[in-house]
View 1 (tube, rainbow, N blue to C red):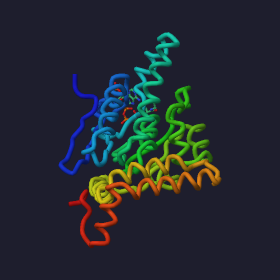
View 2 (cartoon, helix red, strand yellow):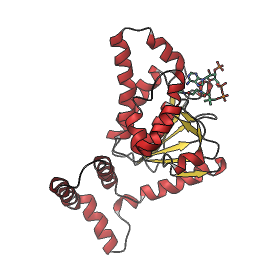
View 3 (cartoon, helix red, strand yellow):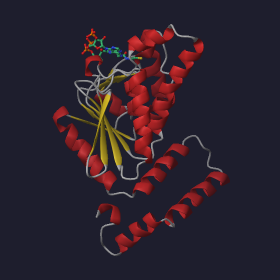
View 4 (tube, rainbow, N blue to C red):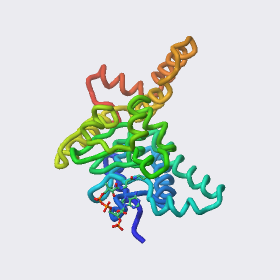
Length: 261
Ligand code: COA
């Protein structure tokens, strides 16, 4: 049985994860979900990992949930069905919260859960031929476990249209609604990803993880005294770390910080 995804680690600490079920446009089934969740959890714990790039083998990024698997699950007991759905919800959560910067390299169609994976990544770069959509309603289901991340990415107004119509949108429209950050010709995709990685690798790894937590925690919170104090505590904590001392010293001494050397 071939690997449901491929994982390749570069000397720079960048791990490239490629969904590898091209025959079904990288749709994910229970096996891929379980294996990818485990792999991401390990990458999140690994200090040598500086960034994770997620992409798809073949012409699509991911066609979302494997519909054969979905059909199979409908025949299972309520408990089994729920346990299985929780597995997919957990995958989305672990990707969203990974303490490493994540970059979606969207090489083609990213539909249903594929759009969900994109929304869970920190940065998304799409090729011009990519398409997106929460197509679930067209199948009589809903984009439930991806919902929180899609709404966080595009806001409730755009999410209503996407989720209620199930329509497919081209990459350029996905950029307009902030689902992706950049759209480039397919042949320029790797150069665009490399440019993003170059910026990420300049930054302190612990600072990136903390910044990611900050961005995740802020939306929807009223600016109360408690929040203001929370932000003060975060910077007080961060600037005392060895990483911050090194970063600030390197700037003042006009040299590269240790993580760039
Ligand atoms: N689950 C299972 N199989 C899938 C799949 C999915 N989500 N998406 C595609 N496939 C399979 C097709 O059934 C087909 O299988 P076959 O070769 O046995 O007939 C094969 O992948 C090729 O798909 P096809 O539709 O012929 O390719 P295409 O290039 O014309 O279109 C897509 C590619 C991804 C745009 C199209 O397959 C599609 O829209 N897929 C459904 C996406 C979706 O709605 N996902 C939401 C799931 S909740």
